[in-house]
Image 1: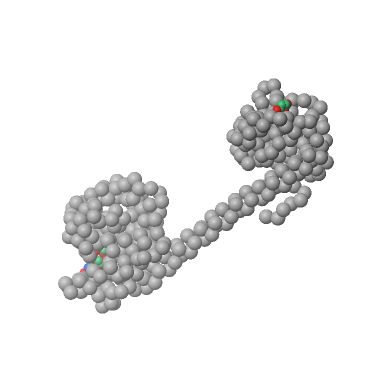
Image 2: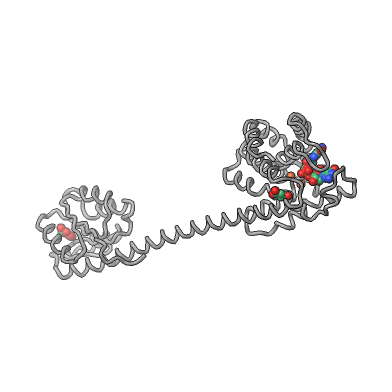
Length: 351
Ligand code: C2E
Ligand code: SIN
Ligand code: SIN
Ligand code: FE
Ligand code: FE
């Protein structure tokens, strides 16, 4: 971001009088580090400006094709030329023209007949302004770039944090990392099938792995019990939903917040018979309705300390039988409709 004194500045000069062009061009050379680009025809000048960087414009008012005012309007409309310093050459007694030129976007004036000292002084000032503008713009774009980089870093760190959090839970949970990967990707597939935005799909993919994180709060004799849980044990087990929510809620991170909501609601059932709140139908957040299908399908087809793995056919039958009861029918349909992707995910993430 250092000011580079050697940067060549380009001055666009438009005047229908050849003699003026020669004179102005010679004056611009005196400014040093400047190149003059002179045009007799304003339309040709505009054409040139559209494809070249311009640091200063000096334009006559009275010209045959289009006048200085029309020139300014057209010049300002060119991308990147909205704030390029512009001097208009007018007679001193044409106040009306000057006002209209200001409205059109002129920055200052040169008076006819042009005085060399005045020309040099104004041009120099305008070029300083131009340089400062350029540096400001560069600085703004550099800052925007830095913000982008910093944001990407934060997203990466957040992903890493979530991954480690899930890993910590995995030490105790008989659910494996592969189960987590599969159910998260199944969830994304369902979200896509429901027509959710890519952003929402990604959010779900990142948040779904946290659905059972509250199991860290359940004692081993229940969590790892090799047989069926009795009623009292299952009541305790059910607490994993709100434990997960308590652990993740209130975060400024949208991923953790989504994780909190999913942890709380992933055992709600469509007919209202689930836990912890007995929510019904659309009262259950959509992420939770999706995760319920993805999680149960994968839990059924996985081995657990308390059960053998079901076959895929048995698990599909279970989803279909539970459609509209345990599960949101749209989610079941979206899952089954994307069967090829489901199988690809099962192939990719094995124990
Ligand atoms: P999980 O093993 O991840 O199972 C998630 C959900 O998949 C279960 O939620 C249930 O809806 C479904 N699911 C899994 N296995 C079966 C099964 O064999 N039959 C049927 N019908 N559904 C099954 P749920 O029931 O709310 O259980 C939540 C968690 O509680 C389970 O997560 C598991 O960690 C634990 N759990 C549930 N029942 C038992 C059990 O009998 N013994 C033990 N040790 N743990 C259990
Ligand atoms: C001219 O610029 O060519 C003369 C008239 C004016 O500038 O107002
Ligand atoms: C895992 O991420 O592998 C398990 C964490 C959990 O229980 O949700
Ligand atoms: Fe669960
Ligand atoms: Fe699970």
